[in-house]
Image (cartoon, rainbow, N blue to C red; front, top):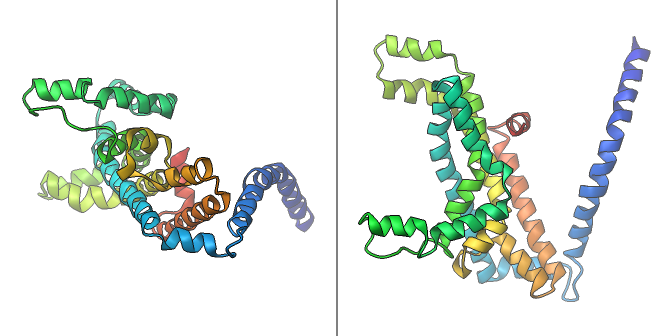
Length: 282
C-alpha cells in the first residue's frame, strides 16, 4: 500500500511539474526581478519606497485608488444582489436571457466597452440628451473625465464578477427555509434580513473580495474615463514608466500595491476560503 501511495504521489508531482515550471518562469521570475529592481537606485536601497510612501501627492493617489475600489465594490454589490436574487426566482427562459445580459460584457474587450461609455456619457451624448430632454437636468452633466465616469465604467466591467458568486450562494439556499420563516409569521423583509441575507453572506464576501482586488489594478477604464483628479495607482505606475522612465520607482509602487493586495487577501481569507474564490471564478 505504501508503495502504491508513493507511486501516486510521484505521478501527481510529475503531472504538476510543467504547470509549476510555467508559473515559476512566467510569474515568479518577473516578480523577483521587479522586487530587486525596486532597490536598484543610486539614492539608496530604500529611497524609492520612501519617495512613494512619503510624497503627499503619491499618498493621495494611493488613497484615491482605495476609495474608488471600495466605492465600486459597494455599488457593484448593491446592483448584483437583486440581480442574482432575480436569477433564482425567474423561469428558465428568462434566466437564460438575464444570464446572457450579465455575461455578454465579458465577451467584449474592456477597451471597446470603455470607448462606448465615453460616447454615451459625453456632454452631447445620449445620456445627457435624455436627462436634459426629460427635464431631470437643466444642462448637460459632467459624466466623463472625472470620478463619476470611472465609477460607471468600472462597475459595468466588474458587475459579472459580483453577480456570479452571489447567485451561487443564493441558489444553494433551501427554499423550504424561506417558506418556514414566512409560515411562522415573519414578513418578507424579516425573512430576508434574518434568513436569506445571513445565509448568502459568504457569496457576498466572495463577490466583494473579487471586485475589490480587480479594482485595485484597473488601468484602461480610469485612464480613459478619468481625469487628473481621479488618478489611480496603476495610472501612476504607467506615468513612472512612460513619462519619467523611472523603473525603480515604478517597481516600488508595484510592490506596495502587491503587498496591500496580499494583506487584503489574508484578511479576507478569514471570511472567504481561497477555494471558494476559485470555485466562484469558474
